[in-house]
Image (cartoon, rainbow, N blue to C red; front, side, top):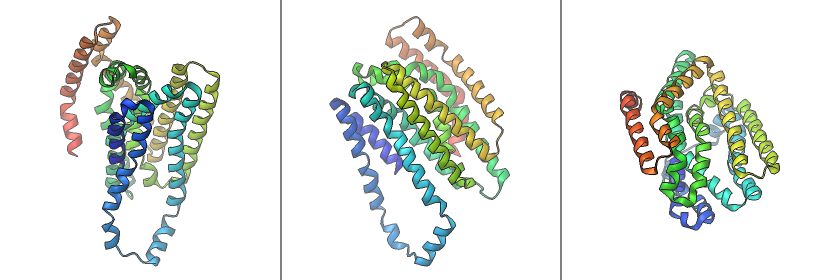
Length: 321
């Protein structure tokens, strides 16, 4: 349902892109209907299952924390996701809010198609009663994701600002700039979303809710401080940086719950970022020397092919699992 929701949101917003921010809003609203239709098309499952009141009470008492805190956490996350667009609308006008909205929609798509899919598999494969095997699975997923995706970091970071206007048109230049701001935030979010079920596996639902509530307060505090800033670029950059720190804290929280040493995590990230910088040298040279867009795209494709070629065995091995 999540994959359907975000995929349809992406394509519907592109479909209505010519209507500017109104089209973005319509695409966003319509994207909620397709997963609901899909859900009710599978409603026959509930007809086959005959649940007694006694069974429902038994399961409810065993997992009473889940409906209480998971629902509250979901509301906190939705509020935290939606409120920035409203703030930016009031602070910087509808155009900037629309640019931000499209940027976050584009950057969120890989998270749904990748991060949340891995997260579901992670939960189903996790040996919940064997702590040693659980730690091993956690570390394996984390390590593989970093090794596969972080070599692309600087390549994506330096190309987004030019690529978005080429794909969507020159009117969306600001969206490309905002996407480049968000790169670190969403690369870390791939890890965070992929390991999100750590909270359910270790049953720290209540503690996680309070942490997410603290993150929401931090986001709101940041947004309120932006009222003194007239530069929309600076305002959005500050907000994105705060969110990057929040996602990093979330990853540290998951490592703490899993009992994993953070030193190895940071060492691996730094090593892969250095490799990413080396791979991206041709593109960086093209940007510094201000080559035409055609040459920038050529260097981007060459670097991309190089990374895929080097990571080929790792990617194939990981996704076969």
